Image (cartoon, rainbow, N blue to C red; front, side, top):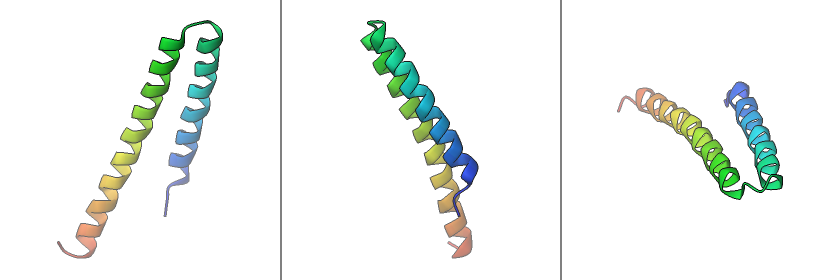
Length: 65
């Protein structure tokens, strides 16, 4: 079962990054907007990789591998 807190964290990061991206683009700082988007993506991917690692550990213990 997926932890609902993880989904809320990912959604909050997505909303925050989207708002920051729009503000920076309107201010004429497209490069910083792109870096903000990439940083948000890396943070979310790190969170997901941690969850996938826990899933693999659970599967290993379940099947005694």
